[in-house]
Length: 209
Ligand SMILES: [Zn+2]
Image (cartoon, rainbow, N blue to C red; front, side):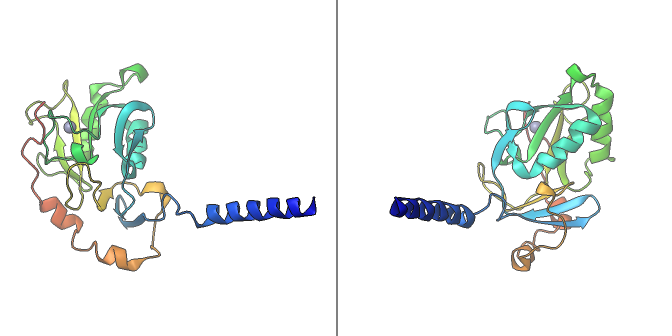
């Protein structure tokens, strides 16, 4: 009987230790708030379902930004991560860093809300505000009031279906704000400064619909 108990205790301990040593889901994610409304995140990219929008997926590092938009602008997301041919292959939908947005009619959202969000992200045509890399709205073919708003985020180069190593967002993912524990990985991201990414030219209309 006592031996039995001992084995049980050992098993329980072993299980607990395995649990402790298992890598945490966000252990590889390093976020740094580099400006008031600009966060750099290195690592941790993964395509996940967007909470509240069943069937739509996105790089999980954009979720806090989506929450912010949902609350302030009554948005409805019609597409996020997508490898469909209706989107440009070198745009941000195939890497989960683009959102297609219309009003959330069911909550009383209107195109005025989307106008405000479009202005917030791109006050001047073709000069998006960081962290947005390309904004498709009024003045862009197949985008605009009455059609949809497209938002692309700045990121380090990557291949379709591969989460980018470095992503810029308005809000830091997982609330991990401030100094990071691993300065080296952030240092190596320095080549992808917001300024250099702002300069990288997106296709004029990075999607066809
Ligand atoms: Zn789009």
